[in-house]
Length: 141
Image (cartoon, rainbow, N blue to C red; front, top):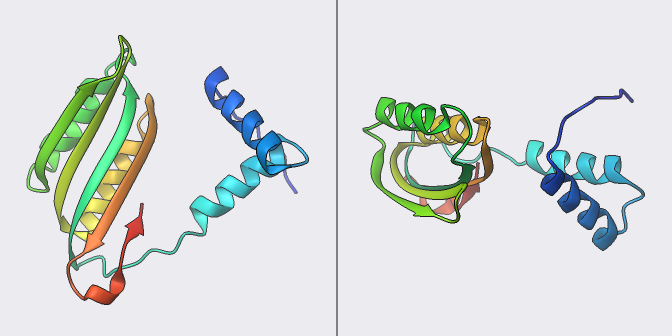
């Protein structure tokens, strides 16, 4: 096993500590490993070239330097995928956006991963619904 050092803000660390207590983990490392396994082992579903609709929702820190500009640029570069966006001011520093997207599974997944990986985006989730073949079901990105 290898040791990795990461930086976490106090709120995220508190959430991990709460999870450790609620789920009975031996410590933070085991809780974080479990969370990583869940995220990394999630199967990719749907043909990357198949059509889909999706919702991309995320909360971000409005004060993060240049974040609003980077998010705006990302969506303008993928303007053909966006059907609608809702922007909500949660408090003085946090905003939530929900975008309805339509395109290929690959394009929508790429945009979702890009947005959620931006520094300052705190929570993100994409619900991708493939339109080609009803048996494919839902996918979390």
